[in-house]
Image 1 (cartoon, helix red, strand yellow):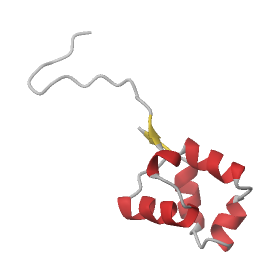
Image 2 (image 1 turned 90 degrees about the vertical axis):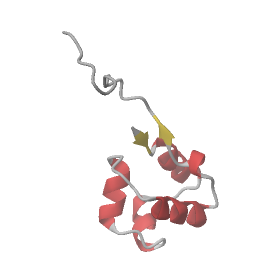
Image 3 (image 1 turned 180 degrees about the horizontal axis):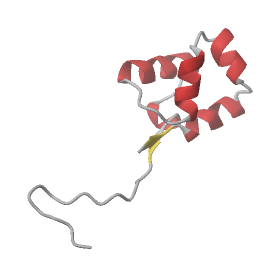
Length: 79
């Protein structure tokens, strides 16, 4: 699962609030909510965030394993 925990840390370091995101940077309140809940984003949106905050993607998101085992195609899991 992709999570945006580093994004919130970046905002904290730059003293940017969710109010700022919406009114200073023009993010829709629904987008702010989606970020908080780690919902899917397009690369276009991630690119926009990187441009707005002068950062690299790795500074605003990372992959966290969900530990869900999915068997290879054709195999069934026991248990």
